[in-house]
Amino acid sequence: MAAPKDLPVYLVRGDDPVLTGDAVRDLVAALVGDDDPAFVVEDLAGDDYEIATVVDAAQTPPFFGGRRVVVARSVGRFSAQDVAPLLGYLADPLSTTALVLVGGGGQISRGVLDAVKKTGHVIDAGAPSSAKARQSWLAAQLKASPIDLDAKAGALLADHLGEDVGRLPALLELLTAAYGEGAKVSGDELQPFLGEAGGVAPWDLTDAIDRGDTVAALENLHRLLGSGRHSLVILASLHNHYTRILRLEGSGAADEKAAAEMLGITGSTFPARKALSQARKLGHEPVKRAITLLAEADLALKGAIEWPDGLVLEVLVARLSRLGPRATTTGTRSGSSPAVSRSRPRSPRGS
Image 1: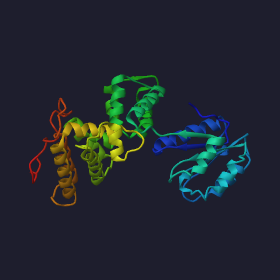
Image 2: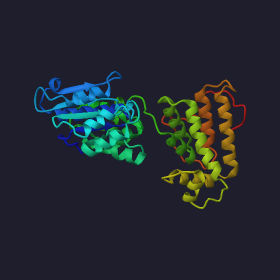
Image 3: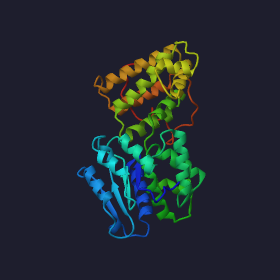
Image 4: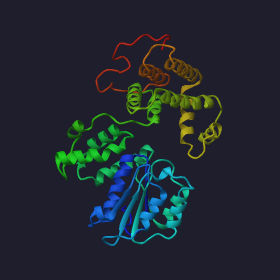
């Protein structure tokens, strides 16, 4: 839903700088309307401006037209003490100014957030964090786009982007330029424009391992590494996952609520339910083996053996995915399993 255009202040926030930037651009364009942005908009960016500059700009009457638009970027870098003059302004804002505050640079002051909610409008520009909510968000973005992706193309796009949804606007613009507005785009027509696969969430990796789907687990590992995730960070995520399983294995936890209490998880009990289910499925010996494999991988990443980090994690992920029931797969896209597709040095221990 579009933001109201007659409010004195707006806050645009989001984790993805591309999506946040696009939301700011669209909001400013709507606020400016038919006026000339060169005379209407004052854009404050970088680390040089202070809150006093924002307040002075917001209190300046318009020279041309009936309203000014002041954009202040990276307001998260200001502390609660810094924003005191801004809060004073927001208590009685100028009706001829539309102040656009943009998140970034740190945590937005709670006082600023409360003041904006009271007198203006907050725009959440990022995609949702959960997979289900992100899927709904992506579907809405595609529905509003100037081109029409068929079901196969939409599924291919969602899988390819993963968490890198910030690439979506530019990709849609590229497809529109290539095929024209209103064009129906198939999966085959989309494929040449996709580029490198986007990153995935860490739980996509652990979910594939839990299913025993080695192919999917290795693909997700490669996408995590390709998106810049450090090897030790990935190992820490796996260690945390199996530590939860270890604590629940043989614990006698009757249900996910009891498991959540045992793990100290507050809020949603879904992570506890997943860990409890996997603990019951694996049993004692496979869980014990998983902890041993993680310890060996930790030593290997710290130089115990002369393997590349990626290879250490590949072998670890392949072994972990074989500890429980195996998923039925039809092979990789290239037709062979990535776990054995190239020559590797022998492991110091058996698999």
